[in-house]
Length: 353
Image 1: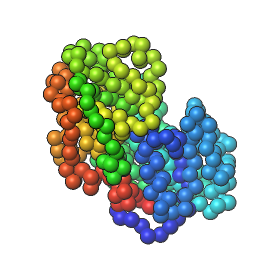
Image 2: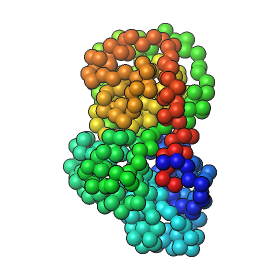
Image 3: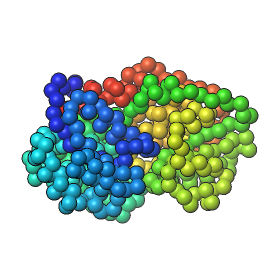
Image 4: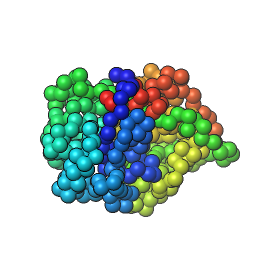
């Protein structure tokens, strides 16, 4: 799939804020929308950071509670705007906005492109959500309605084809990526401390990330020497600092990449969920080593990460990796990593439009 030369009018639906870029889904949507806007005429509808709608002309999209999945007023306004502005294609970023997209396709006859950040029913079942089968039914309906589906890995593509009966010809892999020139150029602060600092970051209300923090606090931290600081950064998880005083919690950090470069390595003890972990790709682009579980590194082509990415499965192995970390060390990835995971080439070469 290459770059198309024609320009079309698109409605881009995102259930996340446009700024700040605080999580994997927000980042992916940002670079997808930016790439589309370079080639097409885009009406974009995002949810505000506080859950309020952000407007694209007359099209607000809600991002909290049930209206995030189904809002009749939004459907009416969006359908009217599609016809009035002669919008030709609908793009939905993540399953949360997918039902709106599928219903708008039915109401207006416009083709639908679904960009799936995960196989959501599979993730829900992995982390024990009781009603994962409802997620399955929603995802089955939305992806069957879609004319094109993009996903983040070959593993996810195989799941969409096998479990939903989708034609392989309409499911494309567009991996998560990084803004490599930006991240590789992020300045590094001098690391003059005499102790090692490792980092975990992510949205802490997300169950796999919360479980990762619990694993670090209960399994890894008790075995670490006193010269290791475990830092946790990210939105949510307000109760965690009091529960785990051995860890250093920073909350939301404006420039997470500057923090990554200030640390000696990043730990990703993820045991559930799906998709690919943006935190791993961003850390490697920043020149810092990563240790992850196999699930955490799922979907990442380890043939292009060199020695910068290590895979472990136990707390003991993770502790050994941390103990071997040099203070002030760096990790360099091969050129093949940059070629595969730079946003500038991903959407240029993998987008259906």
